[in-house]
Length: 202
Image (cartoon, rainbow, N blue to C red):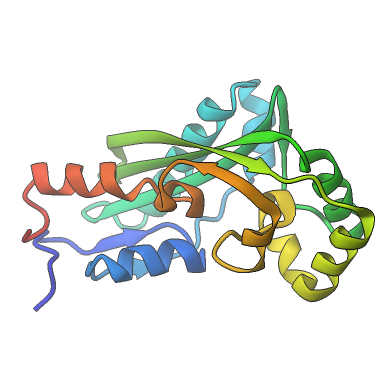
């Protein structure tokens, strides 16, 4: 018997392997569905520039998009933005862009803004944004090239060209923030909400 106590299924509006792992490790039974939205188009149309607001907007829109076809279910949407000062980063298109991002991030501190929204019957019933501050160490061109050689195409799947749960850990000298926020899902606030709503057994 699982921990989920909702009368309707729990849905994660994401195919992110990290987010699926976090929910599964927390003992929650859920279905993962792709949220078919134009993230960059929504962001541009919103005219938002604050990275936390953008992350929250996209988390809401992902959850709403899936909720349309599953109105009775609790749908979790999540998104993450990476900001270096006022500059927002997107996933690199390939190795040259990944190298350019790493050159810019190296020796500096950036913020990961992780947002979560829960939607049911098309209505937002919970949302939260958590922030982690990441300080990347200074690296030589040879070190950056070695990292990219070993990491391969995986660098194009994450903003900032790193996955902290993998080889990306070698890039950092200091991290301030919880593990869940860094992986893209503010799990502690989400679980607190589910407990308040008596949707989980513990």
